Image (cartoon, rainbow, N blue to C red; front, top):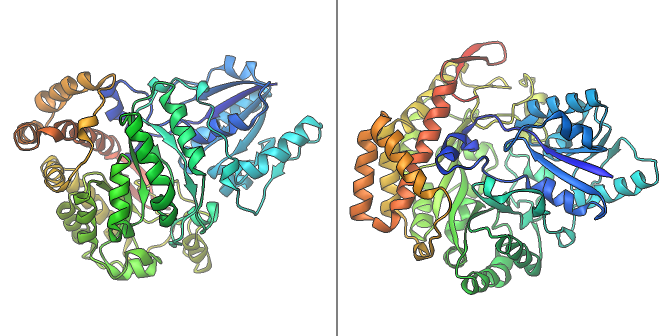
Length: 509
């Protein structure tokens, strides 16, 4: 059996980092971890190839070779997924589809031959058994949650690791919180489930012995869901492994803001090599956090929590949302002020979207306010529900936030503010990777000479060299990130899109 695994293209968005990747000569941010894990579950005697369309295009010869095409995608990859499926139908290649897009929206893909939904540890084995017996069904689903101790190491042999800016690992699934706008609990449940210590160490070994050095992203939606296991078992094992291997990796992940309440957990994470954490801050307005069920953000000093995490040695990246029913007209200025004062350089600000599978989607449908399905992009102007605030005011305020926080002056001010607060531990373990020296010279050319931000670039350049020389590589990295964020904004800034019947200007496509 010849199996072609296909990962559809991501559009050029906030998290694609497409413009930043050009500085270091990489083609994509991360490999398709889900497909690589599925590949490891397939029979060993089957021939397998993988096409990541973010690395290279899918060509007809790929489809002609295959007996089956396995495709997985996120919601934001929906357009590309439809195109791939259309090409497979034209070439008469059978399609097997799974992953978040198809699990949430499988009714939208009647042309797919076999839908293997939910967690592959549960639904892939019966599909494979039926396939061998010649009786494969159209749809496979399972309401149970998988035991992750059965999950295999991803089949890294199918990719060229040098094409990617970072590798990725999944340690756990599920989140103890149940925010109204989030679909994680619908996909993975509220009880955190995790891999065994031995599995995690084996995955680290698998990357290490393939020669990878540098960033590894723990893709868990809330890495700290089970704090007790992390502190007692997982992080001590990681610290021991990293010490023995002389810190070949540095890690980043996603967590809830209550990380700030546990100094011991932050200490262990930093000692284990974690340097960055993405946190869903959403809004500094207390009533909007209450409305969305963001209980972990309520009744706390959000700004103080961010600075506590930064001082512990973790850079904070933040997610922010406007468009809650409770949002007052002043919310836009409040968001700008919080982002600037916090020193959160990578601030993803999005309009609230009612994603299928969330409580918000259900509520908007019941209230008659749902206007269609969301695109899956965090930063596209595409309201799919009727907001309480005037739509023109909401969209104009959202645009004002982005225009303000990513203006060079404000952006570079946040970089310096972060570098003043940030207390890293492992900078002495820095590994020079391919493309880094070239990235420095490219940044000097495109940001320091050609770019309109050149005054701010050189101010940061010399400030970090003199005041924070050990953080100089990080300063250049953030300067390059800023270039990407502005390029994406400029690309989308004059593109008209329809906001469910209203013609507006999109900052991001």
